[in-house]
Length: 298
Image (cartoon, rainbow, N blue to C red; front, side):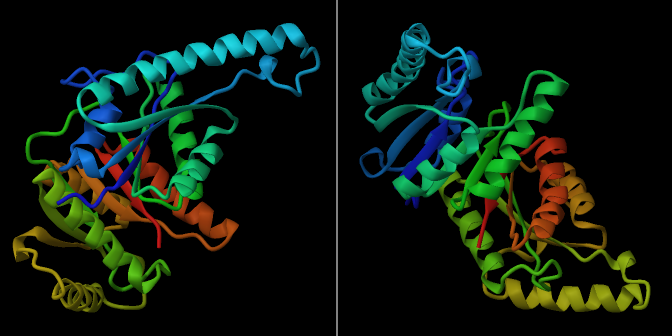
């Protein structure tokens, strides 16, 4: 049974849509895999357009520019509507909207709240190294702003039974709220069921980062906390992993070992400093791991 009643899909209306195996943009193809009942799930396709010289604040903005902007937006709406119409022909409930907005992540985050969506899907990867950095920065800003579960995807299609990897912190070493790990697990379990996938759970204890305590004691404490936490869930023992490395290193290593397709992780920030600290880990995960990332907030 699907837990996704509303899914907001962000499409890049400036570029040719990246086509998946079923000839829909890859963002849509992955979103559709969460749907078990077309009648119960609404899809909202969002595109954001903006050109500075066509904005109201531009110094030479006049009636000609107003007409040009309207033609420009009409063209973007036509592109998005063509995808929405194809989805409707396949029996999906769908609507599409183009926004004239910059920065676009603020508009997307607001739309997610206004529609009360269960999931936001956005592509994260650019074609070039420069584009990849810019898009990942845009996606990171969306991580900071979006309060809804956010799936950042790449071009690679999922296998028939994708591998999910949930990153938890039962010791709350990074000041995460107690309920965040449970939210991560519930989200990962729901996705596992919807995608008919395989779920692994990873916790990193950074044993070497505590110079005044023996690594053995640290590992023991973290193992006990992990065992106690996992006692609430029916996950095979062989699918629960404790790493002595730092979180980013552990995630990279286990992603390679498990061939993980989707990483489910939590972020929390209570100040600008926390934003920076969380960003260092989250941006590395988004930028350097060849996997899709589902971000959960408290």
